[in-house]
Each structure stands twice: as structure tokens, then as C-alpha cells.
Image (cartoon, rainbow, N blue to C red; front, side, top):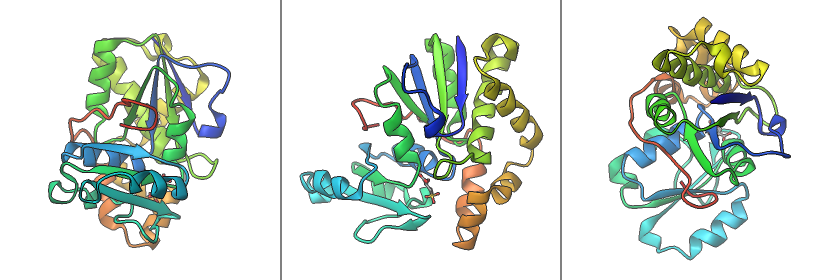
Length: 241
Ligand code: 3SL
């Protein structure tokens, strides 16, 4: 098993493909995906383009779909929901397909959608992702952080470190055995620094501050919670989890 961490979709190689790609967008797309599936959503289908989302979702029965759209942290006009994981209660999402577009997370997913296995992780479902990796032992794993419009995101790389740290301790591997690039060691060091104050990390991160300006305080708290849902969002066809 070799793990590679990429800080943004733009830094993710295009000339090769891993056995397993893990997309991370702690604030908030992959937290929302995990929460929605855990609450009984039928599936989440992702789009980078809002017009394409509208066109494809139009063909789905109206009572079985929810359009989820976010740009700049705010709900897109014409969508049913914005990107708050706290909207994804069983009453709202059960049995429904979420057609979702967000600024960075859905773009990161599309970047690796041709990998044989594509899963998403956030802190909320970190444990389930680690258990999946321990069972399936993919030869090469890429953790792709969504970042923010091409820039590094503190919370995504810390989540990558949380996954790697847990995997190493569960399997009894030293990190040197698993580390495929320098970013792996950086991610684990970052996680060590913040592991006992992840809510503070959310408030320190630049995107966390953006969300705080939009008064999404409860979202920041929820996204910092670790190992609270036991769902593995896994791609069943390109763009559908
Ligand atoms: O960029 C994204 O994909 C979103 O998760 C950003 S936000 O947290 O919904 O603002």
C-alpha cells in the first residue's frame, strides 16, 4: 500500500491513476455527502456545472430529487438546498437523489472519477473510510484535497493526515512504509498539531472564516466532529455516489 496526498485538484496528476481515490472536502461538500447518504438519500450525483445539473435533474421524478447548489458558500438560486450538512436530515433527504454542485468539492471528484474506486471522506466518516482501506488494501491510494479555487486548505490536508494516522496505527505500519510523497508526512504532522482542537482548526482555516462570516457556526462545529457517521460514499458510476 502506498498513499499519496494532493493538496488541490490542480496538483493532482493527470497522467496516471490510483487503485483508489479518496476525495476530501471537509468544509463542506464531503461532509454533506456523508451526512446525506447516512440519512438515507438514494444517491448523490455531482456536477461542476449548474446548467448541466438542471438539465439532468429535470429528467428525474420531481418528488425524488433535491437540487443542492453552492457558490461562494451560499445557496445557488433555483436549488432546493445549499451545501449545509445540517440540512440533510432523514425527513428532508430520505429516498431522494441529491443533484449537487459546489465550488471545489464536486470539481475534485470529477478530476478522479475514472479511478477504479472513488470514495469520499470527511472527518465525520473517517473511521469507516479507514476500515474500508484496511479490508481492501488498495495498492495505490490518492487522497485528493479539494482546496479552495486552486489553493491549499488547512482542513482538507488535516483530514488526509487523520486518515493516514489512523490507518498506520490500526495496521501497525510506520508512516515511512505508506508515504508515497512528501505531502503525506506534511499532512500527518498537521493532524498531530491540531488533533485535539479540530473545531479551532475550522475557525482558523480561511474557508472556515468565510463560512463564519456567513454565520455557519453550527456547520463548522459539525464538520469538526470525527467518526460520527458510519457511511462509505463510493462511486457506483462516474459522478454518482
Ligand atoms: O467548495 C466546496 O465544494 C464547498 O464545500 C464550499 S462550502 O463549504 O459549501 O462553502
